Amino acid sequence: MEKVILDGKLVAKKITDTLKERVTSLKSKGITPCLATILVGDDPSSETYVKMKGNACERIGIQSLRIHLPKETETKKLLETIEKLNLDPSIHGILLQHPVPSHIDERKAFEAIDIKKDVDGVTSTGYGQTAFGFGTYPSCTPAAIMEIIKHYNIHIDGKHAVVIGRSPILGKPVSALLLNENATVTTCHSHTTNLPEIVKQADIVVAAVGKPNFIQGDWVKKGAVILDAGYNKGNIGDVDYEACYENASAITPVPGGVGPVTISMLLKHTVDAAEKSMNIPSL
Image 1 (tube, rainbow, N blue to C red):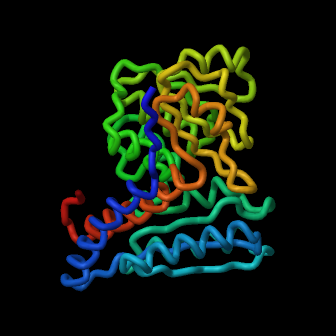
Image 2 (cartoon, helix red, strand yellow; image 1 turned 90 degrees about the vertical axis):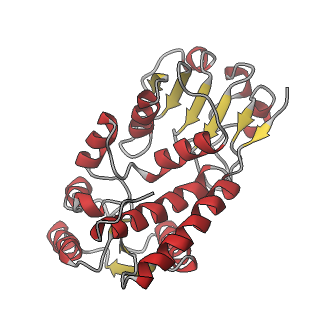
């Protein structure tokens, strides 16, 4: 069986090359797209992610505004910070880095983000719009998975997709996006029984469970397409890559699969938001 390695770096480059042109066009009209990232506390991984996103912005000409609040910050102060960004017309996208310290009401903070600036797809309104099929900014990792599928012309209509994971910014929204493309979707989670047998029925497998090497090779039927949205310590995905590679017709590597496209979708949503602020139809 011919294998296709779903190269996320290639997909991401295609997206960012287009975005550079759109950013240049916006700047010629006096608008510089701007993404504000909020980091609360000193979690090293979160600091790294925020820096990566900021660097990605700067590479294509998007302004990156980084706001670093101390870990003692209370929910009220975080909400005030978000509201200032909501009211600032020069800010087009707002990203609150997850997770926040445990004493903060994270969901309340997410909900405070203006839907027009929710480029990371974290609000319940954004999720609801995505589920109904008219969401402007779906969560970035689900959007990345769909972009990879589109780039490689993977047929979805009528296929059985199994999503392992039900988080509000990954498993649930990607299930909705696949359903909207006429897949038959099974969403699995920690209470699912007979998980291997369910995965064996899948034409498309989306791994979003947050456990290294969780999906085993003998769970996967011949010819399945595997999209690994997991990223665990040591650059390990949620899929046992070597074992699953044998049965898959197409598979994303980790790293270099879904991750680069996730960041590029965040950039795309920010540029989309900047264009919408000028009533320019987004691509």
